[in-house]
Image (cartoon, rainbow, N blue to C red; front, side, top):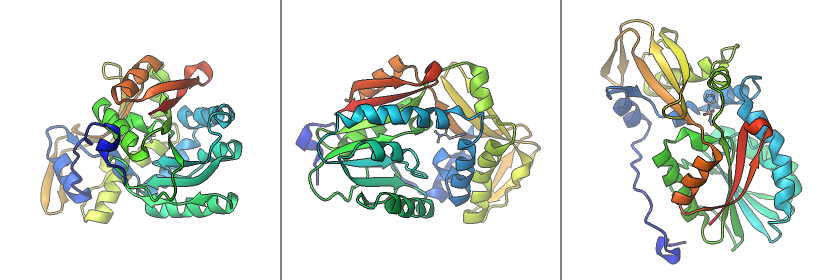
Length: 320
Ligand code: AVI
């Protein structure tokens, strides 16, 4: 196992994993009620997210997917020795395919995801599409350092597409980047997709789609709390509300109580005033300069930047 001291890294940022029930109770007791966005992704939430990715308004998914074949072709000349790809928050394993098709030196693929059944099904499908690849899925929360099941001493390349880093606040994003350096080890790289700052209206439409799928995705977090923690939320009594907060450089998602109401959560009565919100997600957007500074603060060097059409999205190759 790697030791932090082996390559002169700062100790890992201490983080507390309170678990779902405690996190929910803690978040709903704060003056601004909040729920951690990672709890969107049960089986139902992961299915809704897949539907979001097919929406015409939700540009980050298709824009990044269109950029990846070019990125993969460019990287084929960089990664010539055997390597292992570690994907953080792997989801449906679609975005890895252009890399696997173009870079023949990839021997092992370790997808990490919090949503176990979703990951298992996607990994089986990928294994049958790429029979020579060793696919080693890990069910886990990549907010915390993850132990990798790597056999051998190949170079590790992290892959973190989809601008999931935007769902962390900048301090948490820097911690994630530091932890990823530790998890991946010396001489590693990280290929990361990050959404860019753009017109507020464009952003607004992406998080307020006409079909209301994002609203269902947002409310599902309440249904999940009902299912798994026996709470009695009525999700229809909460409105989806998403807007771009230009001062903070992020899209915020909230669930706004449509009336004064009291909800029972694990024996605690949680009171809502009419119009009071639960803050469910932040989605930070970074200019290339801002992201390069963030990466540098975590000890990564930005080796290459690819910008999508109209600068709608960026992919960066970072080197440890
Ligand atoms: C997963 N993540 C990067 C998405 C985002 O854009 O922040 C989640 C999402 N929330 C609403 N739509 C999509």
